[in-house]
Length: 296
Image (tube, rainbow, N blue to C red):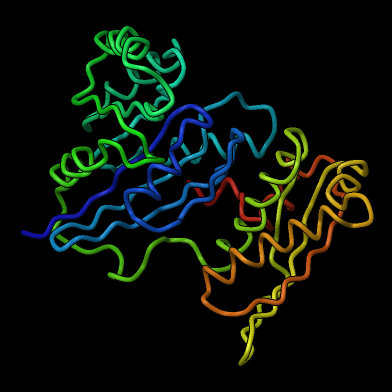
């Protein structure tokens, strides 16, 4: 019997939420990087099997609000946990479980949906270190606890089977070949931002936004022009790099990723503009795709 439903994936920054969703779906729907707050939007990834359609809602990491962009990210998390069939709370198993994790789990367990605690990155620790940490989860009323590695697919199958059992709806929300609710333009912009996260130091990427100015599908290739926003002139210099080397590297990495996504040759042009304090400017945030009112 066919069933479908929605699964919110939440947790602190950099615990592997996007990597987990990509691993379950088997395709890349969310960008990943070793830096916290890689995900900024609520992104839906669709997992189709013969008898199930599971819509995963990837969310930004839970963190303190300092800017309007932070407020958008936090509201994305709150929006993602409404009208769901299941919540996966992802924890970094390579580190001690934090009090913030326990508090968040207790809050989510008060709602009318089941909660699974998913302890990720167990490939980066040892059992004698992990077991005492898992005992902390005895204090919360989660329905299930899973110890997995999304990166290596360790113990992923039992988690997938339990997720499928929680689906309750009888309709298909997305077509069988649709992997995400986001547009191609959004995915292209995210691919560019992902490569910046990998290529730049810790400070700069969090002050960067990407907007697609043009995307034209010609017969032989796709022409894409994108603008990168940053907050400071020295950040612009860092992004460009010595003799333009850094922006060339970012552009090459992004072009190859986009070509794989679109299955077509891409001609990518990147421009950089300094917009001071853009993370607090509603007009700029809306143009880039971070409009608070869209989450109401």
